[in-house]
Image (cartoon, rainbow, N blue to C red; front, side, top):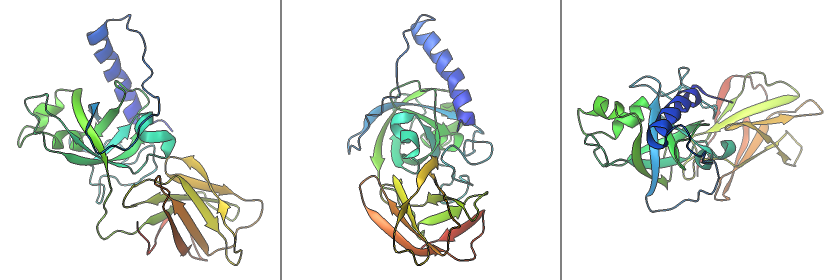
Length: 265
């Protein structure tokens, strides 16, 4: 699912490449997915999109499917990631510390952002297209707007554990779900912050059925029979850790509804 940030970054990337390399610049594939978590800082570039103090997308969502990212616990500290960060949706929810030094307005202090969207037009091997809020957060006090005016800046980043105090893993049953089609968004996972596999168990079945990734952090099941709730859901993160939310989706479930579990990494 393409996001608004992709179109904005395409223009930024074009202007940057023309200014730096000229119109005959050799195209570079910045979407090779070779990222591994590293406690050390790595180099990246950052841009921003949306409202200067907003969460990025005009609808406060993005290509991960997360909703209301302008509100806590996301609090607009969000970012699009190119493929090594977005990982075809399996990087959704991952947390990174970012910081900048190479602009007079940079504070050098680390800020934590969450991957909530996809950047299809990177300007570097690792490219964070940040919300206006997150980009400005890297600035010295009172110099947020000055830093945003820089447009494209060099930053450093590293993967860090996510931490959602007081939150449990939450499941949002997506609009359109019915007796033979079930789609669910998974969010607020501590630790890795991401989900690489989701399985569902129907009432009285005793066996798990793998769901498949629909897009972003939304997983779906197209069934050949009427699904019997309540449903238990099993999730696995990038580190291989598994959690089970037993009967988290009740028998009287409804689409477009949040169901909060009692589990957390």
